[in-house]
Image (tube, rainbow, N blue to C red; front, side):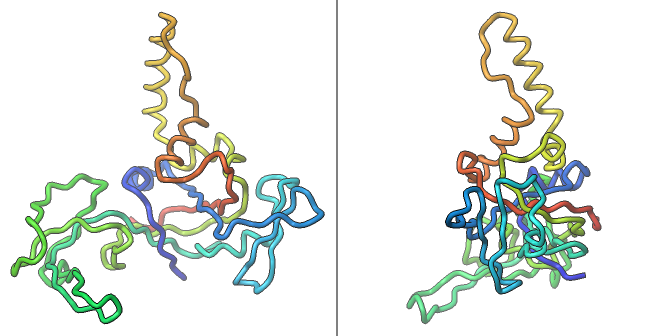
Length: 238
């Protein structure tokens, strides 16, 4: 199985582990450009096919032909190796960078060789963190997901399908598949309904507004309604 790395935040990792997340959206980069003289049609430069791929606002969501086959995150049958925020055992050293003409810190991961087990931020582990960099002895350090080595990755997903669609074209069923916390949404709606009886509430949370807020909380833009890769998957491990 060909594997591709994919970053997930703590909330989405928990949704993966409890089985509620079976889909993810990733912005197409670069965004498709409007096709001259054909309103609603767009073209996207595809490295895989060495040609331009067409998508269109005039087609039904997901009906974009071979566009889904060009996804840089993988295709049907490929694996997604999840990278998440984690804790590793090791130490920091400085190395001189000729390019930057100064010393830079580098983390030496000693987790495996010291017979330790990686810990994961999504599980809020009780890890005794080292006081800072530069100590002679190794210790535990919190590491960003982008630096997660394959040996530390515990979640492997298998891609079931890939399609292309606008962000705001998402269906209610797909919002649920994205791993929305349905229990938290229900509690929010119950609180709203209780307050609304007194006439002091506005803006009852819905699936759609909850999804929008989740998307924007990760730095994504909602109003621009970008084209996205819609990747459906099933969990292989754990």
